[in-house]
Image 1 (tube, rainbow, N blue to C red):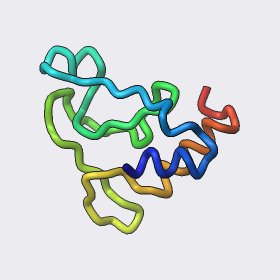
Image 2 (cartoon, rainbow, N blue to C red):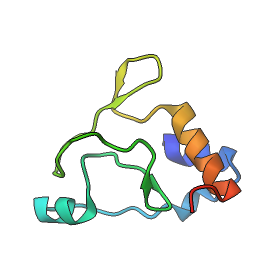
Image 3 (tube, one colour):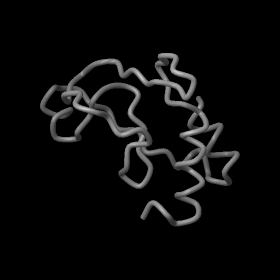
Length: 90
């Protein structure tokens, strides 16, 4: 998975990922979950959503070159991980 690959590259243990299962719309609302996959580092979304409502859905990301993707932009993810390592996301 892209997250684990980038974690390893940043010197973060890829096994330290905390996977949360969102089963209901109520769970999604409580977690602020706007679709799968949602990746948070230190409780911050790597690409904060706009006005998308919380719910059980697939998430769509826009890559740096403007294309639509089911995964976040690798460079943005890498930057968020590097900031976490440096302590800038606390």
